[in-house]
Length: 351
Image 1: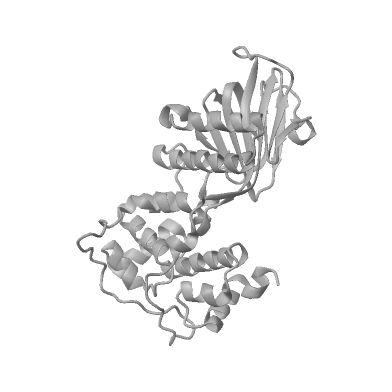
Image 2 (image 1 turned 90 degrees about the horizontal axis):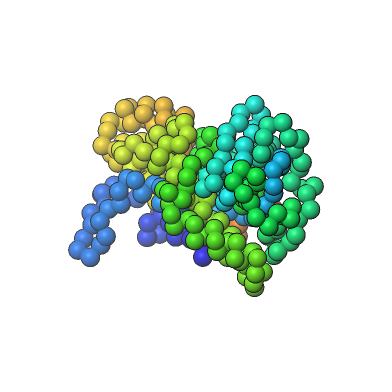
């Protein structure tokens, strides 16, 4: 079962002070001090856990493709979706515009912003749109494309898993725009051998068409995609943008993790600087340089992203959302939401 965002993102226990009109309520400035029986404070590296816990995939569709060479498959994935490819056997060339890279057996790539791209056996082969290739549906969200080759010899074809999905990182959604066009984790299985049983389970579920296969496949896909994101972060397989650099900074990462744990706290620049153990001016400059937004601007953006998610998907009441994000009243929250998004909470819900 996917984790509830409200469990990890709701404010600390205690009712918010509703005397404030347009700002979230203030909380105690006394630092948290663990007592006997409490777990130790989180390490700053646990922002990765927050990212993976917030990751959700929806609108998932998978294909298992087995084709002999020559082959060339074109994908035209909407920019709001991510595309995942895993080369189970053989090899292929991934082409995006003029950029090409070879994928070998065991390689996996995630295109977090989708886009037009092709998987080819060689550059000169004319591509065919994946949607125009006959596929056999195996369950609601999984189909199979097989050109009839019962066995693939080395260099003569490819067997791959491909998935198109809505890629949602929750409060860390801006990280997607910072990611490279292609997140390539070469030899994924050597780094994360536990992924192989997941992929084998996906194939079994699809081929047997058992009850509930679509749900199991989507959950397995969650974990595989999370492993790719984690692998990219851990091994630096791509150019590191400001977001990841900031989150990898132990001191700045501690601040960002704290904000994500307590989005309803009445954060001030002084509070965040104290989390980092820095002066306000030094902290504010470091934060803006790394993330391109002011500390308080970031807090507001996070709250509004969470609010939109809770209103649209969790169907929480406006009053519940206002309370969980620490606003003094529904009216105060609604004004802040309208300023940030250009629409009222009711309009965001869809009526």
